[in-house]
Amino acid sequence: MTELTVRPAVATDVAAITLFDHLAAEGDEHRREFIRLAVERQACLVVLLDDRIVGYGVLEYTFFGYGFVSMLYVHKDHRRQRIGQKLLAALERSCKTPKLFTSTNLSNLPMQALLDRQGYLPSGVIHNLDEGDPELVYFKPIR
Image 1 (spheres, one colour):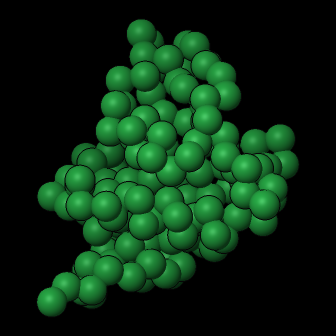
Image 2 (cartoon, one colour):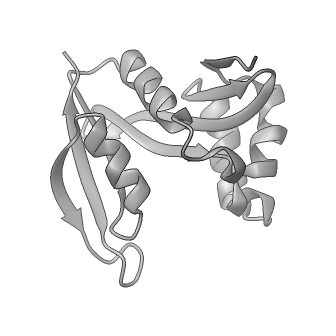
């Protein structure tokens, strides 16, 4: 029987995360540094399937002083198994502000569906981040 758990990331998790995050695995130093700093700042949660990390999420407070999920990433072999939903719910529970925001590209239909299922509301659009693929901003009241 498999057990799914969510816990705060620790320094020894950085290597495992960078192995399955496709940008970090391909050598993107910016992404590797993002992961390292998120773990160091205690802003990162990991999802474990049994004892193996299969996803991670980052919750920051740099978006106008509100919680912002800046990363929600599930290993490609474990997507569509409700792991992202469990991780997002854990991030919501740990949010310290009454409003939580996140964003995703217009092209990321699975993330949009997850946000809809979790009760997030559209909050705006940001153009010119990724050429031809606007960023959709979402909001959820927490308390």
